[in-house]
Image (cartoon, rainbow, N blue to C red; front, top):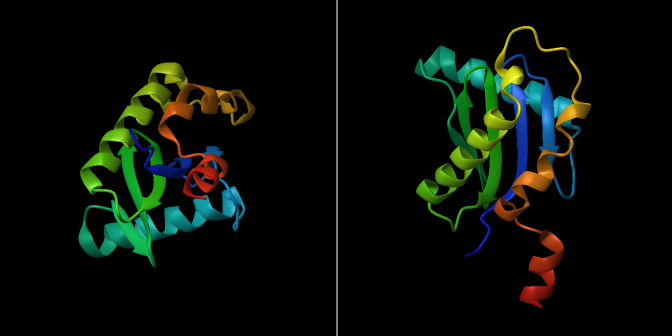
Length: 136
């Protein structure tokens, strides 16, 4: 089965990115988190529901909210939104099961403890190097 998710960010609703797995980083994680938080606030004001996805050129960003966490992934637009949502739901469940204290208001502010999460979800994320060689 093809891996559809390219990059992943997990952020708190205050905009702090607590985990990311990004290839070809073009924007610093915390700046990305602040931007996403601002976009969501804007969407809540005009649409009364917040942001759930948006597209830039040929990339789709998909967002789900669980408690005080946002799970944001990007993917090619060639994948059906239903598939992307299912994969993102699976990742959010694994994260919340692994780190239930993250959803609490008394979070200690340390993001280092989440660095090993990539190992738990590597089966869900596309590896650009492998994709390059497979497409070559």
